[in-house]
Image (tube, rainbow, N blue to C red):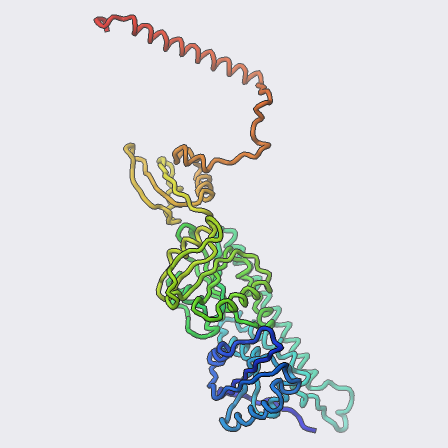
Length: 489
């Protein structure tokens, strides 16, 4: 009996890509070559072809498989990378034929994630995804492990090596899930503290290599790792910054997505992706210069749908320096921006992005003219922290006058926190914008007869008497002034 041994692999790679007419959404060859480069592979040759449907034994058919084996021997390749998902038996059959390691698209993405993981959380999640992927390849890929020892004292039902490995793998998976759950709880506590302190969270999401980390660096004025390669950033990064018109926010840079992202990764990275679910706003960073822009947008939407996302999304079309698109804001309706055109590398459209985020998080901006009383120091400090003051001056009585741009709901909230009424700081026309709108049941009925208590009737009568007496006194003064000759005045 022949037993199957896995090859160790290496960096010298043969790339295989077939056009399978049966597959509705084929994987892009150019993107797969970028994945191979990101993994550190040295691409030696490319094998392409076309089939109506995959071959059950070799996926590519026996003739194409022989061609791949010949190229492996010719170039002394270490590994064959398939831009497709292979079954465990197909992987085993191809390896036996080409005599080197074979890796499909899912395995390559897992390998890249393993290289990029730096934090404790990232390493846990990658290992869990790898073990989940490996568990489907134990039965047929490693048949040599099913051998049992023979001899006196060793016969009997005993546990095969394959069963031992499967049991150990399950134990390790349970350990990883337990540790990831603790990480999830820690992240949940951090989110709860931010929500309790009323600090909004903004998450950057998008296709890998769309420029998320470059935009993150531009916004927070830092220099986290960013490179022109797929999955350059794996571990999520959180930073706190002051956003004009909004105040203090937390900005999150998350892992990039890719078409046909392995389900094992989505499951394993659910703790990280929860940062996306719990955000107040998602900035979907899009590579506007990519020929596959629409497919990439749909891939991100598919992953967000898989994790049941319902957070508002602002589309950020990045890299406009390559498309000559002007920096601008696009609106779905009045006061509701849904897209912004920027270039994070060339620092274009950052003001438009800031304004769009401010409108989505706080509402439509309105200009107000405030005249601050002397006891409005708390309100003044809050306005300075938000950065919404447009002009500043003083009137003749020494009161400070401010012109601000702020949503009316936000200004009403700040006035309430400072124990001030709208009429204390605003002209009547602007103060009415902050007045509460009464429901129909709260409005007085004009046809209904108004009744007063005895105390109210007595107070009203006294007011009427005083008012009448004041009117008579005023009339007497006017009459006396008219009758008095000018010589006596």
